[in-house]
Image (cartoon, rainbow, N blue to C red):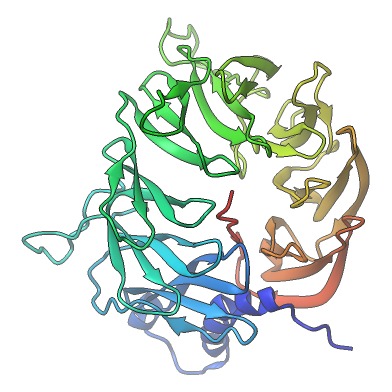
Length: 450
């Protein structure tokens, strides 16, 4: 019996395999030599994203240097061009997002985000007297003319889907998602604001305030309330993560820059710690501290520290403490030692948590498997099983927005493998669905309400 392709997978095929695979097949089967122009003109799909509810997808499409946004909707998932940029002017399309209900598409146009520095500087390969600016745009999913929301970067849609928060001139700005009013600066602070994170109810925004050699975690509520800085020090704080009830913020703390130079040419450790703060008072306590060794340094694998809140008031994070990038767990308010969840000679390089926080999934690349853990009522984690990924070197994996299916990028096997998720047991059941994709590395489904 042929396994029915889930609707979200059909949408994924519309954006990757359906659009990209034919060119690859033709190149392999055709006896006619292909030209350099054909190679340089090959179409490429990126920035695939999905609405948190419904069956709407959006992505960007680059063909012969012409960049445009495309969309599709279930159950047919017929691809449809949404924007009409018809010249190769070098302007990138990035940060594509859908509002929670899928009614609007937000994206960023301009800049050079493959450069080593100055990503947001205007790109002007045509030598125009006035180059294009890096702007944020919004357009109805149903179609129409895109509306500029203003110059800026890193747009984030609010949980309610009514406003977009972004960075401009080192500060955070807010604008109605339909562009019905000009963007306004939310506040002015001395540092460089970045990484905005809405609280679960959308009433507050946690952000990083970079100050050069140190950084704070700030919390903005409204124009009448002073910005709350979380336990400010001369350290470098980052990665703010809201608890599900919005009462606490977990974050990562690293030592500030400066101090006496190291008396050695050897690579120096980069220690770090995890803190938990009261989101109302700003007081914070240290919950975990790495060893001051190279193994204890800040992880550089996918997701960095992979700091997450889960059910049972527990925190998950990644560390190299035992010599491998592994996953650890601990209670947010306790004092017990962190629990190693993925022991063994393998890399736990991709971490995902189920929507209800009851199950944790960790990828093991050298073992070609995904380890599955359950989260108990009191927060303890129990190893359940591991599932073979049906391929070689699972580079990454992700859930679809409905959390019914999980897709694995088996990078060295050149395919995606599809698994059905059992919401009661957390188990993964292979559907028999393989999708040929050359060197797959990442699948992104953004839950924009978080």
